Image 1 (spheres, rainbow, N blue to C red):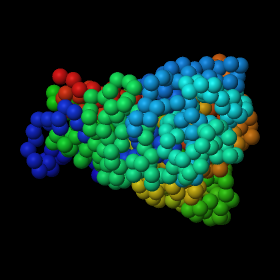
Image 2 (cartoon, rainbow, N blue to C red):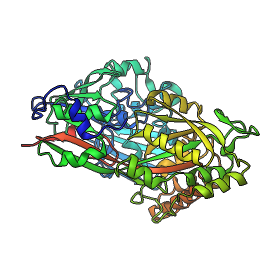
Image 3 (cartoon, rainbow, N blue to C red):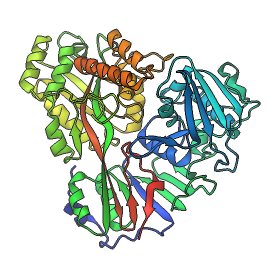
Length: 538
């Protein structure tokens, strides 16, 4: 239900007070979507990845504009196409006081390949390409890859470094066949969530994680960098935008994610609050199961899977009015998408051909494909993950109904959605993806390329799409070190994906943060809400 600003005010049971927040040393954040674990290698999920940035360090990190900058490695270099050397920062300690060394890096690489509880092997993918790792001293890591990995620094930015001290081990060495020297149990989800193994080098340390109830952090006094302003941070999941805003107005929260865009003007006009709006790298898209002759949750007159036909996929794209979704559902805090990454990102189409709204054309294509009367399908979506996700799904379902496709929306919590999607249970689903590394290659190699575990591509291709012509281009692109040539190949791969539409882009989200007076918060393109970036100001 849409709730406007005045409506929220009328329902507050307490008088509106100047939001004093908590003391200057504490920060309470209202999250739109909660982390599903404190294990940084469990699920590449924006709330999880954002929390990981607070608890753990990585060899490389990214700034608010997704530019790679040093973190636990002060510098890096490549010899030829296959040997990368990272020079590690000295004097770094984990939150428990243990020193950080090159052995912790090797242990981390081994652990991501020994994590059966992971939702996917996303974090382990880069390591499949490692032929050898050498540590000539405690502060140098030299990685030799099997094939060129031009995006090595970007990939390392997503690899949260763990302490080898959380497991029993002998001599740590990169020997996956022999367990890398680990003699005890590999870390489990439960041990991370209890805090036992959540030991990192980030600006905060974990004090409490309770799924559904929030996360409590304390400042890591061993942190090597500039220490955050907040001694304690509480992250509270508040899925509905109305209560989040009401909590900010009442002084219960200092900072909130994603207030409704329609309320921004009022907030900006109130001296008690501040607002930050940033375009993001996240595309909202549809994914269809094209791998089965009889797709689950689809009813057609002849029992076929309509999504296997390119004309049906094109018709679905033509049936959707992206401009109206952006204006009326997203309140202008988004942009229609005609490709899978924003035009500003590496390897994007500079002037993509618009995906037009043409319902009459969609009906003709459906008729040509043998579905003049349409068909029925269950349309899966989240209702607590992306901005206005359930409303967007309902709008898309209505557009599809106008061309004869009866799409029954099955909206569910993110944890259930992602688990079911990983098992390819959906015929038609709506997801989101933030391309945090590698520009256009991020989406194309994960969601469009044919699944190839050895090469670490196609891990999110839950629809089972497979096109050898596309694979040939994207695999060449991700192994090309020359940036000019790689960008050309990525644009070629992007054109092939948009021609066949195994996935259908809908829109790019913008992200909004609102905060009380006394705080300054810089938004990020990757949508991470990092407490360390909330600055206390007078």
